[in-house]
Length: 75
Image (cartoon, rainbow, N blue to C red; front, side):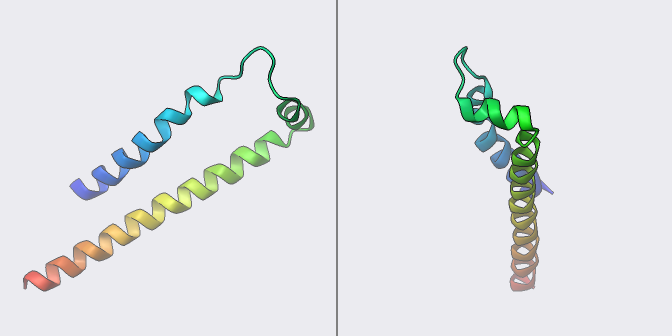
């Protein structure tokens, strides 16, 4: 369980610096405005969320496999 917590904290520490980048200045790019008007920005956010969730799931899966192999080596 501590390794799962460590993986979660690592992912969180990698994502936290991106939060201030989401704040747009007064003159934001036109592309963002067009995506927002067309409703496609939600598709972009959904794709990014799915990719990050898949990476997190992969990390958790690999951590469990490595933990299991480490236990087998100790026995």
